[in-house]
Length: 203
Image (cartoon, rainbow, N blue to C red):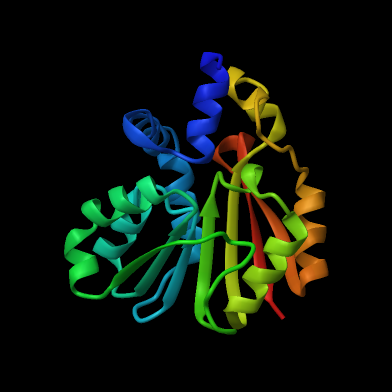
C-alpha cells in the first residue's frame, strides 16, 4: 500500500500506532474547524450532544471542559474509542461522556435521543449519505440541530492523500440530502472559505 493510501485509510479508520499519530495530526489540522463547529452548535448546559466520528475524543474533551452537557461519542474504530476513553477518563467516570463503537448509518439510540449533534471531516467516509442523514434526523429531538463541518472540494484537492477513499460532495448535495431527510438546511462558509458547515435543523 502506498503512503498516501495508508494515510487516507488511517484518516478514515485510525488503528494502531499509525492511527494514533494520524489522529494527533488531525486534531492539530482541524482546530479551526472545531472552534467554528462549537460556535455554530452553541451548546447550552444540560444539552444531550452526539459527536459522530469522535476519533480520539479531542473535541469531546474541549466541549466537556466548557459545558455541562451530556455527551455521547461514536466512531467505527475500536482503537479510536479506546483512545477517546483514555483522553476523557474523568468525564467517562462521572458519566458525562459515553463512548460507543457504532456506525452513524445504523445507530442503537432510541428516537429523539439528542438535542444536538455534530461531525467534523467525516462525511467523506460515509458509505450512504441519504441513509446516514435519515438516521441522524431520527435520533435528534424535534427542532434538534446538526452541524456537519468539512473542507471544500477545492481545499481537499490540495492534499495528496485525499485522492484515495475520500468521497466528494458539493454543498448543494449535502443540503438536499438533509432536506430529503426532513431537515431545514443552510450553508455557512468558515475559515475564509476553505471550509464550510452545513447547519441542519430538524423540522
